[in-house]
Image (cartoon, rainbow, N blue to C red; front, side):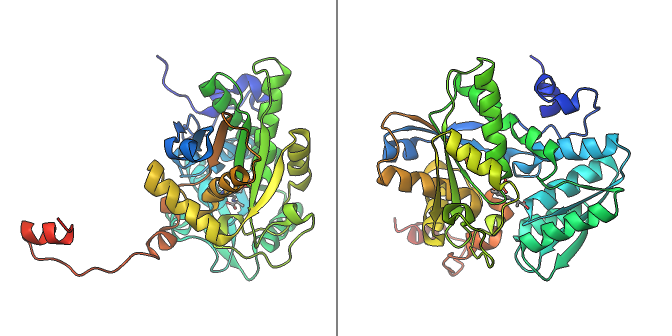
Length: 351
Ligand code: F0G
């Protein structure tokens, strides 16, 4: 038995950029593919959750970040910058800390979940709040790196990010022994759907798998440019991670949808929150609201008859629930403290 070496080492033969790299790694990847019994019963399919919250910083971003930070380091750059709704900044901050590099993060003011901010703080990133939304932050990061080339841009517009993230599709196929029939995931800036599709295509192209899944890309209803076919200037959703109006990987997402005979759908905040509670209460998997969008989209697709009964479905849940503790405890009912007495415990439990 060989211990997991991190995804660059594990998939180096499928990552041409990384051939000669000494990886900056937190041993990301190899996340669990958890069978989802309750969702399977609801949909009549065999549903699995790809639990990306199990990555070192609690989101799928680590797959791209080990690549982007190693690339920057190898090129001699000693500072990285990103725009972020929170997870990219948490991941960039951690990998930069690991490499001994400076990290700057541009975040939309007041619109990033507490856990993610805590991570950037703890890893010593320079946190720059911007009076604008994610799309403004990304444009600012692009302009800054165009002018100051000693700073590496580590958003998913950096092509090595997508390369790293495609390994999640490899892991899904490796775990199932085949590709799934349907793959559902939340879509914000659209790097991840682009990456998964690339991974599935590469495995199918060399015969490792015999099929490619239909891709189901789910956006929040208030931030659904791909569903509407046009950018949204004031995106709004409780799922702050995907509060994005102008996805950078627009073309990649459209290609994934079209080539896979897939679909984009929108989920309202209400449906996202329902799915958020459902997956925590019935599957024991606590994800952040944006991640629950994939579950909401899956349930809607099932209700509309889009899913074929008996299909194998993988739902990527992109980030850990602890990223956003405020949304989790928002609905909590305040209860009075009880005396130190077993009878009082029994009474509280209605026994
Ligand atoms: N889910 C979570 C938890 C995310 O943080 C993101 C993106 C997505 C889904 C969407 O992925 O952008 O590749 O389509 N978060 C970025 C960030 C934008 O800054 O952390 P995508």
